[in-house]
Amino acid sequence: MTDGHGCYSKKSIPGVHSNCLAHARRKFYDALLSFPKEAFTVLTVIHDIFMVDTLANELGLDAPGRLELRKRKSVVLLIELRTLLESMNPPPKSSLGKAIKYSLKRWSKLTAFMADGRIPLSNNAVESRFRDVKLGFKNFLFAQSEIGAEAVAIYYSLIATARLYNLDPTAYLADVMTKITAGFPAKRIDELLPWNWQSTAAPPSTPPLISRDEDLPVTQVIELRRLAGKVRLTVSVEQPQAACQSG
Image (cartoon, rainbow, N blue to C red):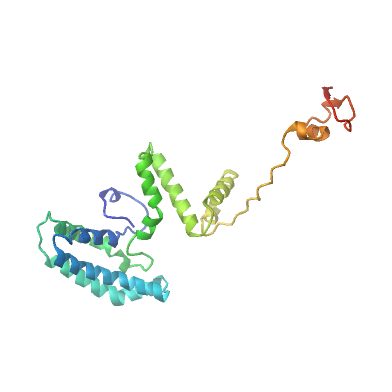
């Protein structure tokens, strides 16, 4: 699901491409000042369409149940909306004229949710979760290359999806990349998707409280540095001062 921006028209991502009804609705909000009566009438019908899905959420309907409810209630509202838009004849370049043209031109994509209960009416939920990403665009502006932009998009999608499933994105990505690097079978890649993922990462080891060689017993230094058989002690290790001499 996208808004109606032309940059999405040439994308060849498998699946159904639908448009966001909330984006169409915003254009009628913009027309309220100049065409209050007409814009308000359209907004009322769109509001009723959204309320059908609100009812589906309150009833806890699954995708088939949601689709059935839409067929009983939303289809009538969509017919009313289409008839209303086609009956208006504002100046084409006015705010209302642009809003009507935007909606009618993308009608099939705006109403794609009538064919599949899994398709939402808008992508507001996604946009709210990617708000920090949108703010980031203004800060770093460029991804330097198309490949870089694609990689960023993939990471953002994985991070946001991990959060949806109450996963720690850092732990999730670290574990997944470790498994892939280790040769995780491609035919089992679905197991690494956020909703299927099971962490097998070992808990991080507690760092030693003593890390400097001079604070460790000489015998332990020899073991840690893999110097066994390569050095010999010139004094007893029990003495306060001990020294090693190459053998």
